[in-house]
Image: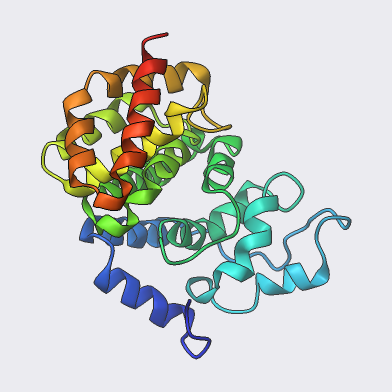
Length: 256
């Protein structure tokens, strides 16, 4: 848990220096540069039944880069549905995405819901440089999860489904996954989170379609030796759990 004596900027700089990959750090900075064209709105209008004056005040508590997760949590959940429009959303987007990819921070909103806002806002119809900045961040976040600190690999399945929630195509994500599975223990640890989620339910999660989940299942099932390698590399105390998930996953894959 973070100390209350540290500011958001100090936390962010320490996280960027010590944890995330340079590619993700650069992608975050590009988001801030590109979306700087959207000034902070004087007021972000919202449904009076859903948004309080205190909620609105949080959005103006500090400069954008210094807003904390708790300042943006309510907005990240309500944006575009009952609070604000796409232009408001684009102002706050860089900081929201920066928090989303910080494994040590939490908006207390499912990442899939937050990233799904992009699809709701038709981001693929935004100006090209905005689309490029978002795509670069999505790809960098995925690579960061697959190659970064192994202790954050538990986010693998969540990050995959969150990126898919934006409408990002599956094929390039699996291509990146394939490359990193051959050379990164972190990627193989992340693989086990996907196996676990697909072993006991028909979809990766409530936000991922059956068709996409089946495609991921077939892709993973064709890489059974890599699953075995990932299990061998797991903590010894967890291996029986992973073997149980593997067996259930492969059994389910046979039904597709």
